[in-house]
Length: 333
Image 1 (cartoon, rainbow, N blue to C red):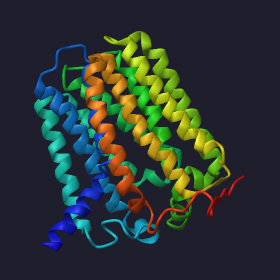
Image 2: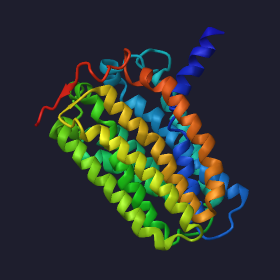
Image 3: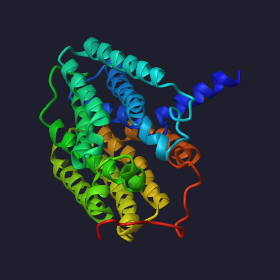
């Protein structure tokens, strides 16, 4: 029984349970902005298709990163031998096929959005991840497409009011993905990945991410007049998300030139939780605060618990460095 348990744990680690709930919640946010009365089936598609696409991205991303991970993260499922590259590709493709089937069932027009998202996942994993800001930007585009897909699971075309919220997630997830590169400077440089912190330095990358995050919050505030249902609930949850974001960037901006990998991971971990609150704010905008909180509370708890138990071991081959320990010097002050 040891082998099946090992394989199951390898798949579970590939899914990243601490991030798994976010794309579905964003899809639901898009569905609530559609302005109709979605059926249970439509809501399930709005949740399930983005989640399966997210999982596909992890499998394919780990497949394309297997050589880089062998250098800097040998404990991960593929380089450790617990998950074969062939299994990762087959499972990723299976998830993509399931996304296409769900999109076709819900709204044939949404197939184009799903196809664009799947192409973006492959482009990010295969080409753009190591190309600096364009790689971070495509991750933001994928989440923006998720908002539109969620709306199109309910009605033929997304309403105009969904577009500003899609822009919020575009800027937000570009920033969040950029923060995620701050802890991997040495490994990315060794593997030939030209991320923003590798090319421009930690200080420039941190300030760019902070500016993008502020832009996301500004657009979210400007979109308040487009909230179709619960403005108060939206603003309360948006304020909570912004406070979490301020805490994350406060950690980074206090030491942008010399950043311990563990501190960079901690800041990104806060953003992983914060973006659930942000997505719940948009759900509240279209469906009310009560259902948004009913979804957010258990999902946030699961995300926080699984992050605390799984993420450091997934990101670091050894226990993460203490804040007072060695740091990554900024190669470009």
